[in-house]
Length: 283
Length: 204
Image (cartoon, rainbow over all chains, first blue to last red; front, side, top):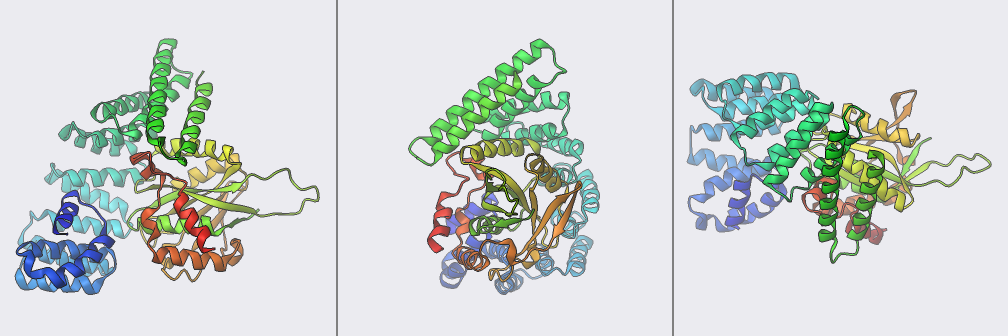
C-alpha cells in the first residue's frame, strides 16, 4: 500500500478518490509502521482530500503536519491550498504573500497565486503572471506546460507553440511534447504549419512508435497537404505516400488490438472505412 | 425541433464528467437515423439514444477531434445512427457558458444535421442525488445558439434516468468509462462502452 502511494506520488497521478479511500485505513491502523514516511503521506492525502471536498480529512492531516513542522513554509502552503479549496481566495493569497515575504524565491507560493487566478477564470492575468514567473525561473518545466495549456485555451496557438518549443529543447526525447507541438501547429492551420506538424508527428513516432495520436496526426496532416490545391505534384505524391504508410500502420495497430475481442471488430471496420473514404477525397 | 435524451445518453454524459472532475470534458450525442418524414408532417422530437465521450483536459486542439468525428461518423453510418449533438462540461465549476470550441464543433455537426443541439453541463448543480436535470440545451437558430429550458420533458423517462444515473454514480461506474482519449492511449479500450451500456440496461 505504501508502495502504491509512493508510485502515485512519483507519477503525479491525480487519483484523489483512490488515495482518500486507502489513506484513512492506512493512517488509522498502520501509522506506527510507516515511520517517517507518514509525513509525506499526510501531505499527499491532504491534497487528495481537498480534491474530494473532504475538509475533515484535510484538516486532520494539516493539524498533524503543523504539530510536527511548526513554522514550515511547505505546511503553510498546504494551509493556503485548503483556503483555496474553500474558495477563500483572498485569505489564501495573503497566506502565500506572507510566505513570499519570508522567502521571495519560494516557487510553490508563486505558482499557487497563479492557480488562484486560473480558478477565478482570470486567464489573461494568470498568463501575465506566469510569464513574469518564467522570466525568473526559466527552467520550470511544469510552468511552461501550464502556460502552453493556458494559451491553448485562449486559442493563442502561436504562443502555445513557443512554450512547447521550450519544453522540446530541454526534453528532446519526450515524444509527448513533440506530439502536442504537432497538434498545436495543425490547429494553427495553413500549409506551412501543416508541413511542420507532419514533421513533428513523424518525430514523435520516431521517439515512440506506439504513439497512436502521432500516427493519426501524421495521417491527417499528410492527407490534408496532399489534398491542398497549393502544392505541386511532387509534394502531393510524397504526402500521399506518407498518408498511405500511416493508414497501413493504423490498420495494423487496430488489427493487433482487435485480436481476441469481438466488440473491437466494429472499430477495426470503422477505421478501415474511414481511411478508405479519406483516400477518395485525397485523389 | 427539440431533442430528447434516453437514460443511456444522459448517464454516460454525467459519468464522463464525474470521472474527470478536474478537467473539461466533451463528447457527442447520436440519434437513430430518421426514415422519411411522415406524410402527415407530425412532429417527432429527435431521440438521442447514446453518447460517445470524447476528450478530457485540453479540448481546443484540432487533429484528434477531426479523427474522432470522422471515425464516429463512419461508425454511425454502419449502425444507422447520425451525430445529433455535442456536449461539454467546462473545467471550472461556475463556468457554464458555451465557449468557442463548443460553438465550432456544434456548428460543424449542425452542417450535417440541421436539428443538432449543443449541451452544456451545469457543474454547480451536479450532485450525487441527481435531483434535477443539470443540462443547458442550445438550439441553432439563425446562426446563433439559443438556450432552451431543460426540464423533465427533455428526457424519454426522467425518473428512470435519475434512478439509474444515481445508482451508477454511487457504484463509481465512471471509473470504467472509456472516452476517445482513453482509446487513443490504448486501442483496446472501447469507446462504445458496452459494459456500461449493459449495466444501464440491467438496471432498467
